[in-house]
Image (cartoon, rainbow, N blue to C red; front, side, top):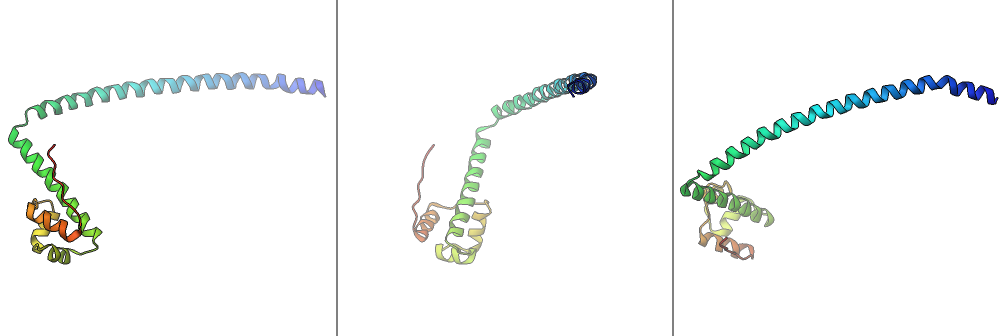
Length: 139
């Protein structure tokens, strides 16, 4: 039986050698593909870097008026979501919320659409109706 076991082991050695050669070839193929992907990624990053540089150059060219428009638009979006969230937390639909806050339905819709900023008086009425407070900060 020991002799048979040795014969099986000797008989499988060429298969092991073939397996090792195949594995080495697969490893080389994987490394070559990884090197190719690395080159593609580096080319992409270089291209994106150019876009980032162009974007930064354009940002420097923004006028103070454009910056102000951008800030106002950001405020409109902030209030748009804040007022909608407040209304939803109170569990009211738009007509009932507008009535409670003393707004016209159209005015509430323009604020919730991000098309207008609420006035200070409107913010104070919203705070009073919801039992919350208003905080204004300068950054």
